[in-house]
Picture 1 (tube, rainbow, N blue to C red):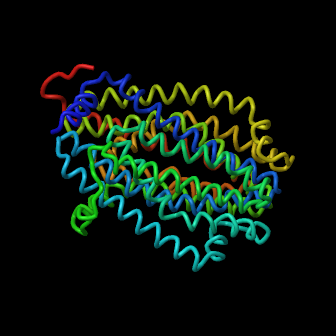
Picture 2: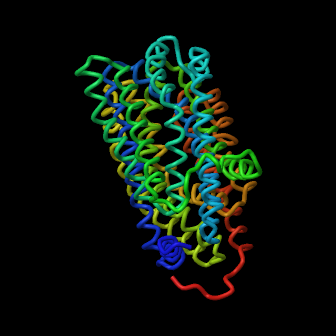
Length: 453
């Protein structure tokens, strides 16, 4: 191994766990917060155009979730294997998996864009658009479709960088694009009078900039893995990436499906309900991004040390991540409970939107405390190659529990079911995952030699 690679290996397998996770988690948390700020900026600025325009953001978010689903599948599938390969000091294999994951995402993004353009109206209606929202959604999604190949590839490259332990490089790419989007929204929308088209153009341009910055990290030799077309072959590595990343596809894909179901259920109560739930989803994910950022700092640590058979460090990393996430989200939960009407009102000053959104936000703030165990457990199963467990736990929150919950509750209780289904789902997921993660750690081997830190 090169001296740089050897230093990185020692850093990942010898640095005290709390300091290591925090050092990797802070850049990831910043990336997620800034990314969510620019998503919320779209929601805020478009909200000034009217309730139907605000609802369009929630509709198109479903399409963007599809892009993210495949980008995460290739990125986390390749990244999970890469971190273990680097833990085994196999840099050549890591480069092969990185290249295959990248080129798969670029090709899939192009195909998805073509499919989207050919069936735009049916797709948007499937995602839950009403006829009044449809014109706004068409305008916004057009720009997203043009940028989808680079957007999907950005998600893949970002995850590979994180799993290598290069969270700071990943942060630079995402933050630069996010800042550009926040600046671009008001300029394109109001200065150039483009309206919702300006928000779409700003988002597309910011994603292209992020892609260029992330790709440059590999081209400038800042990573251990290398991207090369000669490494792209349809062999068993493709299956390994897809099968390892499949839980991410399930999780993100079911997020898209659940968003569609949520929009359809909310549509019965008007555009205000769709807009309210769209706003609440963005706020909820913004709060959770802090805890999730810590968890994503945990992933490369777990992967490296699991590959190095330093199992005590995997256990310690899990405990630290869980406790830190619970502490942070506890604070965010209290803030959300106290300020929910005001926070929803920032994005759309519509009494009906605020009434629906504030109730939903309060329930989701309570449910925040149940999410860290479920998410950290799913990350653990995926990074350690437990594909069946990772796939099953990925299906719970947005699929196996949420879709029946919101369908049944809405039929029985009306709008209250729309407002509370996600919170109820989070509690059910927590109690399902708990015995699975306990059994996993009981069965995990002990270190042959006691590992400190």
